[in-house]
Length: 237
Ligand code: ATP
Image (cartoon, rainbow, N blue to C red; front, side):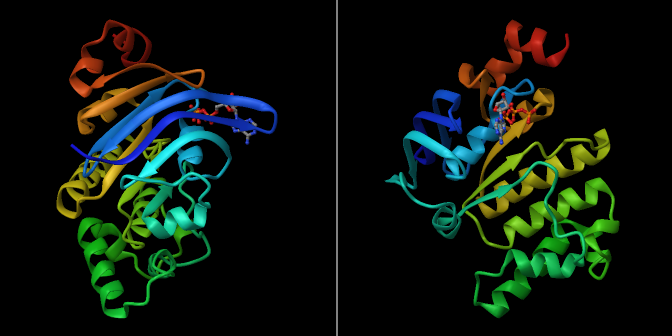
């Protein structure tokens, strides 16, 4: 399948300190790919590097076109959108206002209204709380809002940074089910950074395991789920 997003020999540094040491990864069009690894392995940095939020070297292509040298803003305009770890909703704004802010670069008023309704269908709890301040909602609801807000920009690729972080298992399951539905129905490709390897490998078709800024292992979700190394280190059995 054609790749919508691809990195070759991607390196990145914070100041003088190198953190990624040549990552090759590929996100197929309409695919879900997981990036796994322990704390500090470089998962978040990989997403930030793909979005040009930090100093990077190497080759990144988006929809087959080199995007080296493009700014984060340009990449967002082209269709890449990050849902950052820790959610990143505007806590003083209501659900509705957060969704409108997600669509700030769009001019198609009717389309925005339709997309808001669609978000309320995917996430009924947001529909019930349109006028509620984001900061007063539960962690799971805020995560849903962060995802919905990112989708309001109509991205082609969603970069998800640990959507399960700090949430109860049932909520995580609900969020992952909705993500799978959105992937299938809207065709949004997803690069999913997760520490929860069990869940990530259930929704992803392919996965990369990072260790200290390098790809230590990659393969189909089935291959990684069956790997003794992955099982021992990340799946706990
Ligand atoms: P976690 O699951 O804990 O978020 P991660 O796999 O996402 O881990 P990164 O956040 O990408 O890991 O961090 C990779 C390395 O880069 C770590 O050694 C971290 O200390 C370092 N690092 C991350 N952010 C910065 C920063 N803003 N400045 C300097 N070093 C950083």
